Image (cartoon, rainbow over all chains, first blue to last red; front, side, top):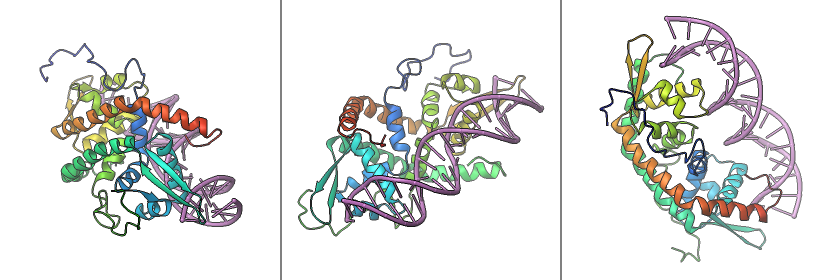
Length: 138
Length: 138
DNA sequence: CTGTATCCTTCACGATACTG
DNA sequence: CAGTATCGTGAAGGATACAG
């Protein structure tokens, strides 16, 4: 694997792009994973059905606006189902769909990896910061 | 599981926060996953050692500035090692560390999930968009 | 309670020029 | 080749007010 003394001229099979620049779907996932609240929302809903207000309380710091946007996008992607009970005051329940539950395994793997390597990352950062004082990288 | 006819009063063990709002590291991972180029860079480096220019060519669309920032951050986190050969012109090689390689498994799982569920997501979006014409959600 | 509508700020990223 | 420096832009997200 590291036996390359000459340049690696054969580009191995692409993993992310199918053909020159064509995204195969990973970008969608990364975008969802990337926004501030989607994963945390999925994690909370993995515990069970939640009402709007319950979600908001479970996600300290989220604004009403962002919670709405987040659950709407998750619903649009088919990860979350939204059930409106026509009562007064209104009652809306959010729940993970089977597709959403399948994402849960992945999220669990991410959480596990974080737990397992967080110390190493923190140490590495501290060492790097000491070796590169005054760097604007962060 | 769905047997809750009364409210779920016992909040299950937290998964993301250790204690009220304390992040246990998942946030760091999500931030890295979230930025535009980190994962793609790791994927490319998973194929082998790469020089700066090689990386740039492998990541169509990335600017010189962003590539620098991305590899610096990955280096700071201990995911990537940077080796400078004091030649002229300069030659710098980037390589995944063992920590970086461990992330590869997770990325692979993400790619697999994307491949497996991309169609379902696309379908769900189309259906949602048809059911919610003129929505600003996207 | 469950949203929408506005306004405003931040900052991630791109473009470009310059350096050793 | 491998960066650094600077500037500009758009989009994400927060705060707040209002509605059904």
